[in-house]
Length: 174
Image (tube, rainbow, N blue to C red; front, top):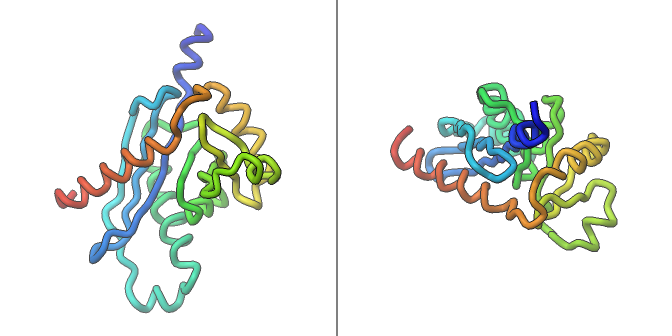
């Protein structure tokens, strides 16, 4: 296998979840090559916690539903496995406690000074990401793997595609 073929096989997973009014939480995972071209997309049906679950889980409901239930299901279901997963939702970082692959979360601050001064901050394309506080070693692995991603890549754009696809799917009654 040539170096070019190996580079083209590098796969990123863009995983996000959102709450759809009256329907519950829905999540999607887009697997792309290093250029952002889609290889596979999976999504979940809406999951609506009942009132008792909302009370019992309290502030841990979001990380449980998005990170453990939705995200974990998507990673297990996807046929084209990514080398790493990126998310824009802090709650999805909980997934890292349940899978072996590194996960980076888009840093909302996006300040180069702040991100570079933290142990968990690193840059992919034009955006800053961070890792789960309990998995700081993931930073090095993510940095080494993402050297294949173009430095001018907009890493927010794939999340927009996932959200639009989720809304379209929910609208059409999956």
